[in-house]
Image 1 (cartoon, one colour):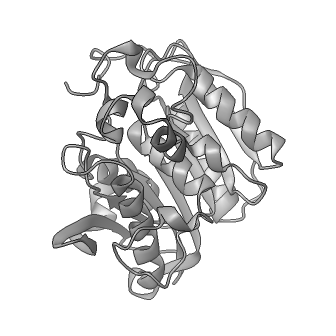
Image 2 (image 1 turned 180 degrees about the vertical axis):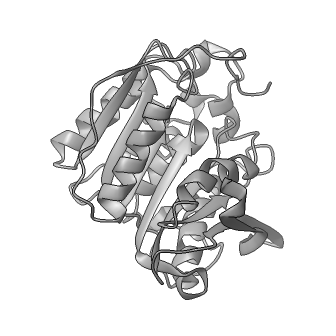
Length: 294
C-alpha cells in the first residue's frame, strides 16, 4: 500500500509572515532510488480563501511512493487573513526553503517542479513565470535562495485577471475580489501584477496546462491565453484539454495522472518520454462540482 512506502513530516515551518509561522508537509519515500531526488511542490486550491495542504499530501503520496521523488505540500496565507501578494510571497518562500534544506530532505535543489489546482494552479503559474521578478519575492524565509522552478503543472489555473470573460461566473463578491482586496475594476494594477501572463518570458520553465473546456469558474480561454503567450515566447508548453471537464477537471482519471507523471519524469528525471497532447474525455463526477466558498 502507498502509505507503507512513504513517510510524512507534518507542519514543518518554512518561514514567517511577521510573527505568523508558515508551514508545509514533507512526504519522503521510505526506499529512495537515489540520495538526491527531485522535488515536486504542491500548492492547494480553494479560491485563495479555503483549502488545506493536507489535500496536497494525498495527491503527492502515489508519486513519492515510486521512490523517485520527494513531495512538499505547502500551506499559505488565505485571502481572509492577507490579500495579494501574500500568497505568492509564501509560495516562493516555500520553494526557497526546499533549496536551503535540500540535503536534509534527500533532495536535489536543482530539480524542483510545482503542481497546483485552481487557485493553486494560479500560484504555480506565477511561480513559473515570475522567477525573475524581485518585487514578488517577499521576505518570509530563506532570502539567499532562488525561487525559480524547473517545470510547472497547472490544473484549471487562472492566468489573466484582466481578460474580458469574468472568472467565477460574474458572481460578486467573487474569490478574485477577495484576493485583491476589492473589485478588479478598482484594482487593475494589482490584477495585472497578480496575472501570470504579465511575466511570460523566454526563460520560463516547461509547462503542462490541464484544463476542462466546460469549466464554469475559470474559463478554458485562460489556459489558451497562457499557452499561446508561452509558446510565442519560445517556452516549452503543452495544453491538455479535458473535453466536457468542469472546474477541477471533471473526473481526475488515471490517464490525466499518467500524463502528469510522464511530464515530471521528462523534466525532472531527464527520461526520454513523450507527454501525449491528445484531449481526454472527462469522466463523470461522483459529486457536484466544488465551488469556492462551499
